[in-house]
Amino acid sequence: MKLNRHLLTIVLLLAIGLTFSACGPKIERRNEASNKTGWYYNDPDWGGFEVVQYNEQQPGPDLVLIEGGVFTMGNTQERIMDNWNAMRRRVTLSSYYMDQHEVSNLNYLEYLHWLSKVFVEYPEIIQKAMPDTDVWRRPLAYNEPFVLYYFRHPAYQDYPVVGVSWVQANDYALWRTDRVNEKLLIDAGILEPDPQQQGSNNFTTDAYLAGQYEGSVKGEGLTDLEGNPRRVRFEDGILLPRYRLPTEAEWEYAALALIGNSETERIANYRLYPWDGYSLRNPDPQARGIFMANFVRGKGDYMGVAGYLNDNAAPTAPVDYGWPNDYGLYCMAGNVNEWVLDVYRPMSFVDVEEFNPFRGNIFTTVAKDADGNVVDKNDTTGHLYYRKVGDPMTNITGLTEDDVKNELNRYNYRKADNRNYMDGDLQSSLVDDWLNDDGKGTNRMYNYKGTDDEHNGATSLINDEVRVYKGGGWRDRAYWLSPGTRRFLNQNMARDDIGFRCAMIKVGSPRGTE
Picture: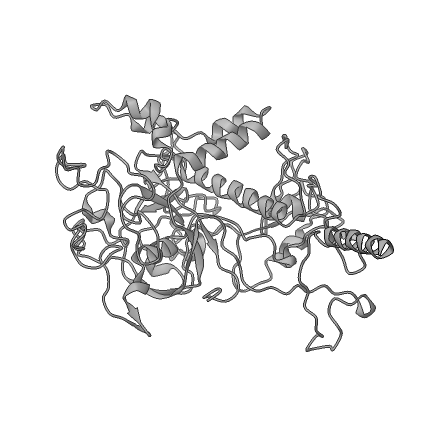
């Protein structure tokens, strides 16, 4: 009996040991052979080609799946502003994810906190990310309390961040990509949390995949087919694609949310706003008469009468204000306008592609050295981690003019910067009067008036650094709440009624896990 008890104890200990040894990070591999060669996947005796079993992309925090499809972008109402910059055009979008809520003050403060801890020796990086709280100031208004308190006071932590430029919003999206992917590696048991990251020794998705960030590996991390430790690859399906601003078409499509009015392939009713009907008030008996968005109802009326503050917001409202549209997205009309990815042109809707339309592409490629390795992100000799396709980057070792010519041996595009493609570039010119006497073509359709005779061109607010914003805000009349309306602002400027939310591409099937 005693022997049996001892044996039972040993068996239990062995079982516990095996249980703990099996708790390391695992990836599910496909157990089959290639349908083209017959060679077996995930078998060291057959070449050891690793193939994971991938189901579906899991959404990141706060992301909602926007099932793509065909829709007509552009004006949904009469052009009372006599503005012809949103002509109607039918296009198709692939599926993507979009934030359910606008980025809040709390979200942005988390970003600044991380920067202040990691880049403590580089205050210029932190300063670059700071929102401009002075956007609240007006010459004939007393808004100093918002200048002082709106961004940092806990009473406003769930309100949309404002005073953020398009450039700053893009930087936030890149930072968010890295934090979410780092958390995924921690949750998978591959990395340990590392709150002591400093300076250049910080996790970025690109640096990790390029082998330029080690971090604190938990146990042995992932192992290959022979049991040897290896790093996570993008092919393992653990890491998510990049967060970014939505394109103008994506934003407009998500705001309209016509999925709520569609049956089979028919759209029963088109929408003027992100909700049904022509009224700005809620028709539901439980909330009848309440405005559906935070906007200016009339001259001088920003929130209603004391005792019955209709929208209960002066000036902005929390990011979960009101009622979500049929995709579950909040504040797609009113509260604050939102930056989108596109460069502004009045005739973009006429020029852009029918599938995933977008103006603003600057095509880049990973910079590599003479041995084919990705250049070190910490290299201080002027290397660029990414470079424009076709650029003769002489500061990158081993890149020759022949390399550049090989990159241009394609039919789909011939230059990297396509922000003004078919709109002011020489390739789309019908006349040559934009050329200088030397024939170099330094003059373009959209020029700022310079301070010298050589660059004393026509003045225009439209150039390659102006970006679209949409949705209407707390300072706007109802006209701007329609998703088809569009305005623009320089990408380095900010306002007290412009915020943003992020998007992410949906990889794989359009519908996800249903």
